[in-house]
Structures are given as structure tokens and as C-alpha cells.
Image (cartoon, rainbow, N blue to C red; front, side, top):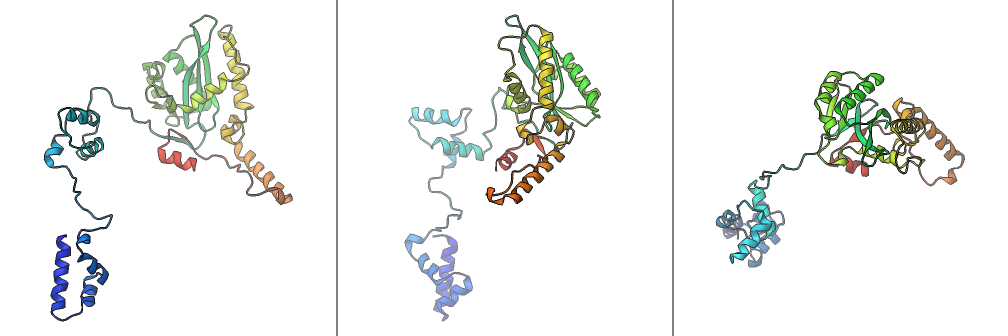
Length: 336
């Protein structure tokens, strides 16, 4: 029985012995007579509240806790101790002890896992770009043409592209310069996200970004999911019906094909993530008027034939914010 309960029981017993009724003594202390009766039973001597702070009976001793610390993981500690004829605790207990002692952080010479890149959000066009390089098949086996492509994540519009024989930082810098001048990008206006390839992080690219005032952002090494808009665009490109089965005849043929694809994608493709407007319409802000007009048309149709509608009309509201590598809670909100 805890010391507090013993003290309360003794106070009530002393009060009752001096004349007052037991119920009155319990009322003054703040417990019920039923609680007092239960406390007097041996089986209820200990605190039964789930939230009560009690020291577990199977708690490891300090000596046992000290024997856990080693340069091995709990998965290896347990079998090694068993081989010596010892059992201290389960692996999960080992982990709890190590966590309490702040011993679960990375301690090896290998590099720890890379943190997720900072979340980016675009509320309008020309705020966040992503870019990447993809291989296009060439006539010679083992050789490729290189497609450099920049996309605005807000509008999904392809704002810049080039096809070259080589994969060089100088060529990428030239494309970014051309795109920024054509779109009228001011210093500090746009963030450019890419992976960690050599052309993306070369000295020429660094100098070029500083000159243009472009803010850099990078994916984690070997994590393609950190650059999803670029990966999705290349998938769309290579799954087009007219994409060649084998290879492009030459680099000029590759450039001609990509030029046609960009024209279709920007000005004809009704993008599902944009509520079925084209990337160019979204880029120029025309999607607001188009989607508002669709809302009016649907509401008018519902008023004319309400019996044909079981609920609300289709949601034609445009997405106000577009995220790149959002935090987990933002992903859950979007899923909900």
C-alpha cells in the first residue's frame, strides 16, 4: 500500500475515533466511502488507475542496464548473451533502454540517411521549377541523346528544353539562362529543384545560378521520388504513341520530335491534375476563368434537372497551392 493511502486511512480512523462520522471525514478529504472500503481490502492495496505512475515489478536493475551498452545492436546483443548462458531482457526492452539513454543515433562510419529535402510550395507560376535530364535512344547501340527539360510545378508547363549529344553542366546552365530570360525571372524569384547529378551541381551551374539569382534545391542521392514532377513528365513523354520504338535517326530528328511533344503537352494536353486545362492556360492564369465558367454551367444544369443530381456538382475549383516534397502531415491532409 502506498504511503499516501496509509496516511489517509490513519487520518480517517483518528477522526472517527474522536466522534465525527466516517462519511463526513471522507467528504472533507475528498474521497467516497466506497473508495475507502476498497482501499481497506488487501487486493486493492495498490493504485489501480491505468495512468498511475508506478514502478514496474519487472524493471531492470541498474547493473542489468549497464550490461546492455555495447557497440552492437540489440539484435546481436541478445543472442550473444544467450550463448554465454545469460538472459537479461528482450530486444524491445534493449531498444527502450538505449532510447532512454540517447544511444540510438547513428554511430557508424557510414553516412547516415539523408534528410528529406525542404518542402517547396508554389502559389503561382514561375515560383518553383524542377528539371532533369533523360536519355533518348540514338542509332548507335550504347549511345544516347540527352534531353534537358525544365518544368514549372505550379502550371506543369515545360518552360525550357534542349536536346544535346553530351551531358554537361555548361549546356544545362545555358538552358536555365535562356529560360529565365524568356520567362522574365527576377533574382530570388524562382527556386530550381533537381537531383544530384554532375551537371546539376557542377561549378558552371553554381556560378550561373548565382548570376541569375536562382535558389537551388536538390533531391537526396539516388531518390527519384524527390523529383516527382520531372519523373512524371518523362514518363508521359516516353509513353506517347508516336515515341519511336527503336531510336531517333539523328539528333535533329530527336529535336523535331521533342518540339512537337512540347507543343502538344503545353497547348493541347488537358492535364488531369489541373482540372483538365492545359499547362499553358494554367501558366497564364486563364484556368481561373475557364473553371469558373464550368462551375456555372454545371450549376445551371443542376437547376434545370435537379432529379439528375444526387449531390453536389463537380468540383472545378483550381488548386491554389502546389507542393514539392511536402511534410507527412500535408500529405495526409491532401489524402483526406
